[in-house]
Image 1 (tube, rainbow, N blue to C red):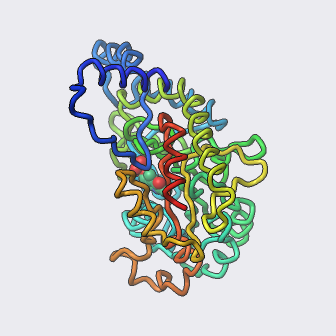
Image 2: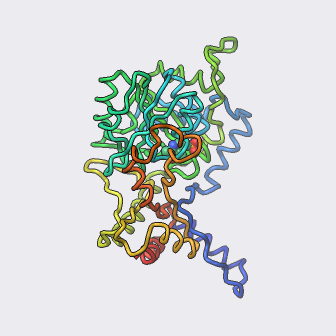
Amino acid sequence: MKLDEGNGNLLQHTHGNPMTEAPPKPIYVTEPFLPPLEEFLPSLQKIWESRLLTNGGPFHGQLEQELAQTLGVEHLSLFANGTLALITALQALRIAGEVITTPYSFVATAHSLLWNGLKPVFVDIDPHTRNLDPARIEEAITPATSAIMPVHCYGIPCDTAGIERVADTYGLKVIYDAAHAFGVRRHGKSILLNGDLTVLSFHATKVYNTFEGGAIICPDAKIKHRIDFLKNFGFADEVTVVAPGINGKMNEFSAALGLLQLKHINAALAARKAIFEKYLENLKDVPTLETLHIPEGVTWNYAYCPIFVKPEHPATRDELYNRLKAQNIHPRRYFYPLISEFPMYRGLHSARRRNLQVASRISEEVLCLPIFPGLPLEKADAICGMLT
Ligand SMILES: *Cc1c(COP(=O)(O)O)cnc(C)c1O
């Protein structure tokens, strides 16, 4: 990280015009992590020589193995992106009818239900974890309910034991959207092992990226096998099609990049941790700006740095948002509006605001601050200075 920064500055000084000072670079909520380009060139050369571009090539196979090992899971199937992985996970388990889910997430969570002709049923979140509240899940179950799709929001684990208890009692499947939860563990064990299936995203904005990409964590080889058919048009072999599958395959470019990204993931996580702790150090004495609480025993991934602007704070959430934007700093209000506010959802009975009071309040308070490897710690200090 340091080295790249230094090189960038050097280039600017050698080639830039000293008379025209460039305006400060915008700072976005995140910036994709990329390894040095020269480390990637040998992989590109291999792809060009082999002419194996997709359809489960050698990099694809190797990444499935190495990722499973890194994440501490047994079986995993790579995808072109997280949304196709969510859609396919629902297909693989033949989910029908109603699915209970959270309004406090990225729209892809609920969209994956609509793409399967399923009815989302929104349930309020727990004010502390900001994830689905198992007691509220139980209240929302009807004879049409077949599954629960919780999200480990910001990578903070759901109450998986509580959700499992409800699911087992009522015979429901559980598909976790773990797009934020790459590498998260609880008491040393991967949280990706909960539920019937768990879905990851490797989009450019996530902690670990393959440009675009995703995966389904599978409990056994049998279901992985079926998912592998589904992501390849349903082909079981050259002449057998066993399901109306989709094209969800990860290509060799992304898989090769993913292998290289794994070599840098620990450094990237350490850089995120340092920035997160810098924010915390600055904000610990500002009770009107609540920060994220990492539960006891959780090895977290520092994916996001949300703060929650309390009504007693001298400035509102949107005032802080605009104040930072005026300085070319671009925080994001993840997640505002709630998914349940969008036109394709707001007519649902479960989308009524009084059903979602906790989620509504939190979505009005949240501001996600920039966090990514390469963000200088002084910038975190400066941003905190603008918040108070
Ligand atoms: C990013 C994200 C997705 C979608 O993943 P893509 O790889 O971008 O398709 C789904 N759910 C959540 C919670 C996300 O943050």
